[in-house]
Image 1 (cartoon, rainbow, N blue to C red):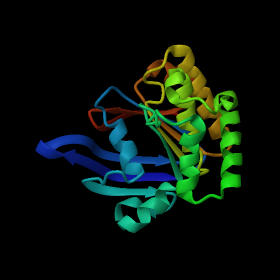
Image 2 (image 1 turned 90 degrees about the vertical axis):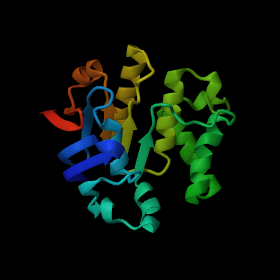
Image 3 (image 1 turned 45 degrees about the vertical axis):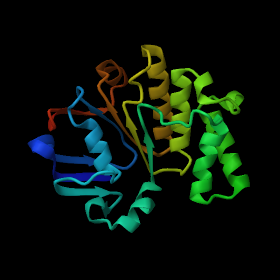
Length: 220
């Protein structure tokens, strides 16, 4: 599903965000990318969904070399990838339904089909009863579940989550991780970037540890 070969990412003034990363994540895996702030976790995720390009190296996602993709092919790549951001990126003045409906409209999904998909996903994340609420009336954990539902609107083969529990307490963090585990059990490949080592240890999933842009450990 994901292969990285000697990937480097250097920013201005010779800031090395990633150094010689070699990595293989198979279809259907649940993998943590762990490490402290500044380790390169977010950069790695951004390279995978072609939000940025590496300075050198090759990246294959579902058999496609994303480094060599022409700009016109990037939207097609991203339709197979769901992304969950730490800060949710929800439209604060729109209802939960509207936040999800925007996705099916952009994707060109017929309205009746899109509404059914919204209903099914909100049921999956346990928020059917709050469909007409706006995000500011939800808890942090509920907002994160809305963000997860939105990321699943395009039926992604791959789900990337960047610090999905960063602003949540321990109990809510485990709720979110269990939900991601359920999504993975349905066949979606899940990659989670996190600095929360307690969650990583609790779940016992494959873990790739970054430090100062380098892959320093890997636990099965």
